[in-house]
Length: 437
Image (tube, rainbow, N blue to C red; front, side, top):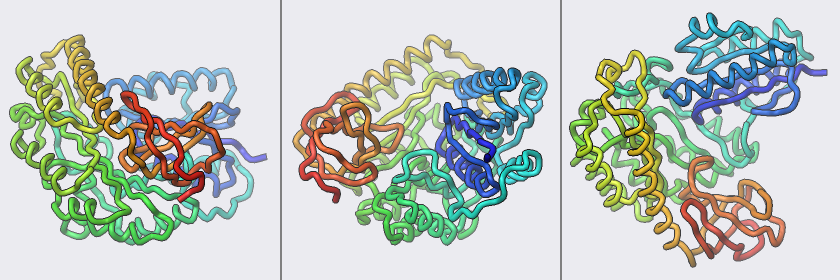
């Protein structure tokens, strides 16, 4: 019987992609592979996140919970990989002795080779994919680059994952074809910064050319963009989103703040006026665009007046989707040397106030969609409802469309759905015609 490996993935979708590549490699070596499974396993690999304080705490707690299983011999091997392990390997080794080995973010091949040599699994098997998806098989994340060349004062990602390295267009198109053959209909493009793509290997921003090539892949119906950057946003990308029906009218563009002093301290390379102009240009050039962003509150020195400026900007701009983080000190970053002057309770209060404002905005936007008919991709059946998404909703983070399960629907298929009701973060619909489109 094959040794069973459970890969537990924490953090962002970029980690998820790494875990999926590792899973396929282990499968080829003869291991049975599960993702985030509660079933009994011989080996557990934890892919950690080390981005902000809360994520690091979750990673440590997860390691400790599996370390207890390792100590009781409920699992035969425990491996820790990813961002936290990359950054704090020695500290983790000194404190958590039940872990058999620690690996960094670029050590996927080492993990696979080590397990194959030590565990003597079944004979290698033929596998026609380089990834074993950890989510539903009709959508997949496509990581187009690694690392980041930016130097945002609050961010440790360049310290963990290094500088920006783009993958070639040809390799990404080939991976997209492979995913389409597996049944994937939606590609979610991810990177630390999508809009920087190609500058290192093609000497120009090449994201527009890439998504055009990807849209030619047979079977791919939606292409979604996550993690753009405001400085140097290419106008050609606006044209591509507006003009290509396969590219979702959706952009995920973290703005982080609106006050010019704070943006300058964050080293975001844009000020308030430039940020406001970019938001207006995107909305003017891409009618119907769903705009997702994130903000940081409680950055060192953020005054009440600067926070109120952000509050008014959020009220006026009315983002379709929004997330908020409270500032977290990160060793080695430029902001780490700044005095963290905002008390934690104030950070939390500011976060909750912004999210309450966004909740009301989201409700108003959703109510306005009642009576419209949307193309919806069905993700799953949950209780009495089929759960799907429109082109304006990214998996795992955005709104969902709940459809009463009067008749069977096919998971992973598109349907025309009439929106009949709405709440703050969900829409309710009924099928116009009970057959896929």
